[in-house]
Length: 252
Image (tube, rainbow, N blue to C red; front, top):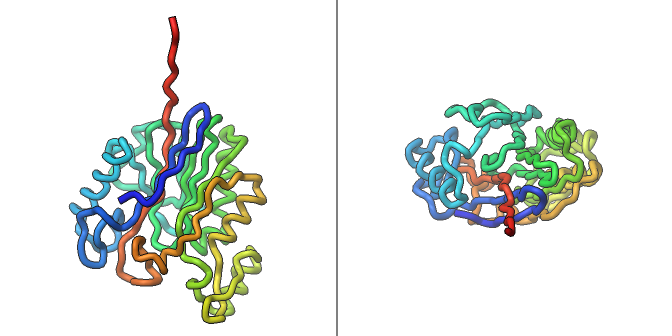
């Protein structure tokens, strides 16, 4: 169920987790811990998987916030717990100051980016695929976090498809490289390719963000993760970030 967990300490602690494809209820192409409702899986099984995730993370189901991802740049800001409707809004990033709400991004090759300034008490989760990365979803999210008061930002970059496996046409590589040159790469077979995660890391560095962890696990190469490039009909794993209040001890 959980692939990895990270902690970014501060006045409020930011917790980050990434799931894998094991330990769930789904079957077939979605076996077994699929968290997406838009891929053709049984909705009751997806709901059970989400409930299990919330339980493991000690978050109630209503406090896992999902968005309907469209490879754009919109950032959803959650300022109140009543803004957690049963149907997610269209956005490819979400941000909050509230503790105990798990901002969730689903992926199956795209790059999940978790951002936090735990001292300011601001976190964000970003879905950075090829289109979103090129359109500036990472920079746009950082700008909104800074407008909200974030100063010292940390990032955790989760698993995504690697440039060895992300083959594209020469035209597409040139198109993306014209926007973000560091994205241009070559596949294991010598064909044009893209390194979206590498480009995201470069964008974060240019913005002065501290990268605490950068996963180079390839989703296409790892059978432990869902991958659209490996298997078109497939599920989605997730990156989740949430804030937790630090307990203070008083002495008589």
